[in-house]
Length: 258
Image (cartoon, rainbow, N blue to C red; front, side, top):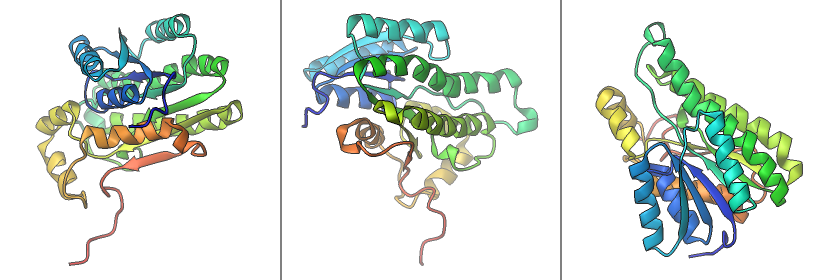
């Protein structure tokens, strides 16, 4: 295993499970000091234990990513304790309910946009100054294939992920000259606890998603997390303002030859 993050400080939100947990583990295995943030205290404890057992180092923080006070306090803490920030994976998110637009509860719509989009804005707002102080860095924001498509019943989720894509491109444009690369990750169907819960709520969408994937399976969280780590690594040094789609071919379009 490479040690390309040795001596680096990395923040991962949504680190209590799924893609975020695997990304935190991988960053740590490659030498990073990881700050793992989530609202799931039990999940965070599990992530920290897995990293420690593997010989890595992780600090956990209970954080509401939609709260400016929480995010500003977390980045101030990282600045005080570690003195730098080299990479950030702004990954926390929720799917929200499944409703037609005319039936979508406004409060629920606002919540999805707060957790999925406002959180990315707030994350970068406070990450960027610390990265500039540190001499540069890399940010990966979790979007989704829903940033490219229009999944029926998921208007809030799709709007939030389209927003992440746009916000990422603006941040990339504004910060490339400062030595900070900003990119987005667009996972397809991934076998995470959040997706499992959504599948129970919307089984028709779950079935359609699986049949629409040329790979004929969903991704394992580690397969997606590895792409996020790559985007934050020196190996992606000239990748700026892109959205990397990791979806088993789900959004290719077209059809398979019989």
